[in-house]
Image 1: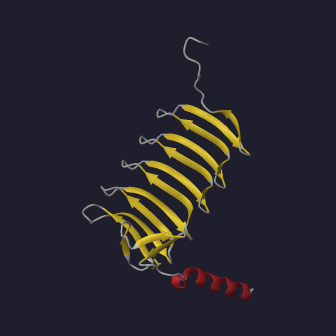
Image 2: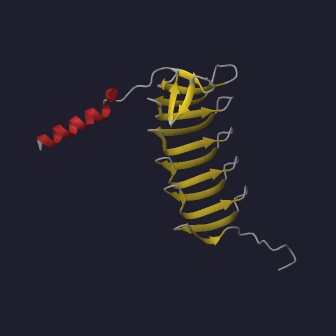
Amino acid sequence: MRFVLAVTLWLCIIACDSSHKKKIPNLYVQNFDTSLKKMNGQWQYKNVPFNGYIVEKSSDGKLILYQTPIIEGIEEGWAFGRYNTGEKLMIRYYSKGKVEGSFTQWWPNGNMRYLFNYSHDKMNGRQLVFYPNGNKHQESNYADGNEEGIQRVWDESGNLISNYTIKNKKLYGVINVKSCIPEGHH
C-alpha cells in the first residue's frame, strides 16, 4: 500500500513539475519577417529552428492580433487571435504541430462563430457553425477527418433546411428539405 501511495505521489509531483517541459522564450517575431520561413513543416528563423511566438500586430503596433507559440520549429501550445478592436477572435491548441481539441472562433459581437473539434489535426466529433445572431447554422459530425453521422443545416431564423446522415461515406436522408420543383408545377 505504501508503495502505491509513494508512486502516486511521485507521479503527481512529476505531472505538476513543468521544469521538464521546454519554456517558450519571450521572442516575438512578426509573421511578415522575411527571416521567418516554414520549411519542411518546421518554422525557421534566421535559418535555425524557431523558438518563440509568431505574431501579427495591429497597425499601430500596440495590440497583438494573432499569436502562435513555436518550440523547436513546431507549433506547440495555445494560439489566439483577436479583432483590431480587441475582442476575441479565435483560440486553438497545437500539440507537436497539430491542432488538438477545440478550435473556437467568435463573431465581432462576441457570439460564437464556430466550434470545431480536432484530433491529430483532423476534424473529429461534433462541429458547430453559428450565425452572427447566435442561431445555429450547421451541425456536422466527423470521424478521423471525414463526415460521419448526422449532418444538419438551419436558416438564419432557425428553420431546418437540410438533414441527412453519412455512414461509411454513403449519404442517407434529405440534403435540402425545400422542394426543387418550381411553385405551380407540383
